[in-house]
Image (cartoon, rainbow, N blue to C red; front, side):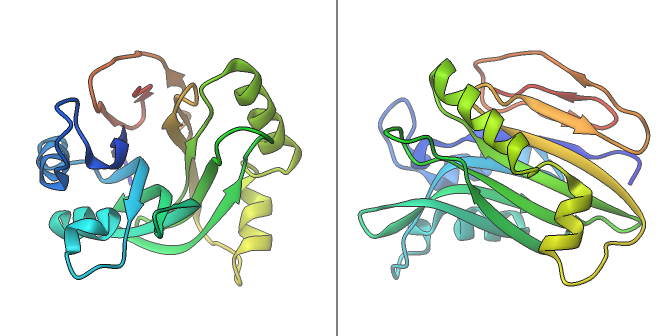
Length: 208
């Protein structure tokens, strides 16, 4: 895995600024970006006859990707949270609760992505909108060692992960896009209001 394109996108339940519900538009944007791994936030998934209502499954199916959903709360009977999509195989996943009391439920979705010669430890994080909330969430991520890939590999998976490992955290609301890779990548910032940016390793960018 020498080059990897990553995108992070808050899709707001597939409702655009024109108030139209259109998962198809999300699919078209993501097709144009052609990312290998995609972190989506504010994804709503209902188990209904219309496949469009399970947004993670619908978008992943149209892109031909594997996916995992990290449910943070229920909205009108549907699972609501983060979703990670990838053209590679997802070997394992776990969703971590990083909710701060009296604030909206938030989560950090970890996936172990089998990218061939390398294992990618990918964290899809949707943080709060206030500075106080984000500070508490970062402290929780550190205190519980959620970003510690070695602890994750030992305690969350039934077998030891072999081979090279890359670590990426991507998300919304101040999380930025951060990469620690075996080829020595450093994170760099380029905030934008346009959804979403695509990035390629060994350099990852912030994607608002």
